[in-house]
Length: 435
Image 1 (tube, rainbow, N blue to C red):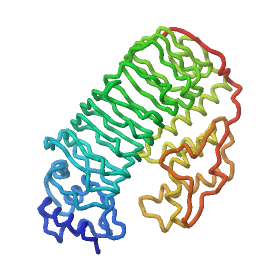
Image 2 (cartoon, rainbow, N blue to C red):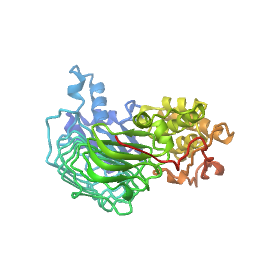
Image 3 (cartoon, helix red, strand yellow):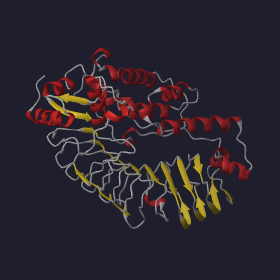
Image 4 (cartoon, one colour):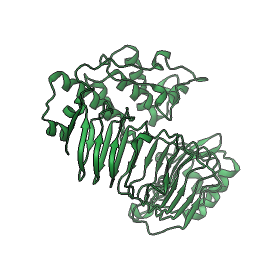
């Protein structure tokens, strides 16, 4: 297999790091030996690399007898990746309990990097400013004190939890939709959000935040936060909010009435002098239905089940596979918008380069079949329930444009879905009580 000069230089250095002769290292990267999916080569360049998978592959190649957990770790100071300037995806995770720390690490050599995982390295600082195309960054479980992502303007997903962070700069990251910053030292003063933010998911538990203005985050669908101490918490502008967990907080007045479909609400350890909600929430949220003594009618229960399925699909962890989504799609109360959302979240545009399943890589065939089947179901109008709105253009990270592919996504799947009016609940009726 021919590789470009940068990839060959990386393999030469890797042979020293792994204490293997260069021929053995080339065996690791031969076509057909990538059973652990730890690398990807395009146009003679290494564009994807999973370092822990590489260590596993090395162990298998040598048939080493040591306990596998002791030989499948490569730390940041053991491997030189600087020649891989064409890298787009890099998973460079160590393991929990790793004793080999490194003061700082620079990713300045990777201008094409889009996806980066760098965990469990006991690193105090990382440099990512040169990664102008970076969309996904997971630097959790280090000992980072400061993180500046202001130059990563394409960044959509950031996980920096489990770090003693006292400074996070995301003030220019207007494309950021997901932030996981639990268990940090971040406060209202040392974390500045972009003014025109499009954050959809925000996790701020076990931080130093004591006040939060949800009105500055109109696109939120998920918010988990703790330790608040303020007079008012109002979600009037958070129309799409589905999940709200406010724990260990003290708030005088909480108003969630305008978050029409909010049904996942928790307030463990919190004290609210007054809380206002709508009839749907008073029926569907256990802690509120107990306060107001409401039980849903059979018709209301059907609506609640439909909205519950939509929330489950919206929060699905795609790393867990497709089985849960398949069950949702088989359920009688699955909404048309839920099915369409699953379809677009599966990123169908990626598979447009294939005209038939025999062309698809083995590890992608299940996804390909799943998307094709769901596309046919949508086109055949098999989902009769239609009470939820959905706009495919709001699904960040995927494109509804499919130019220059072997086939096209049907145009009628690109249109916005408008749900029918729900008459089973009076959303204008307000319920107010003490929690």
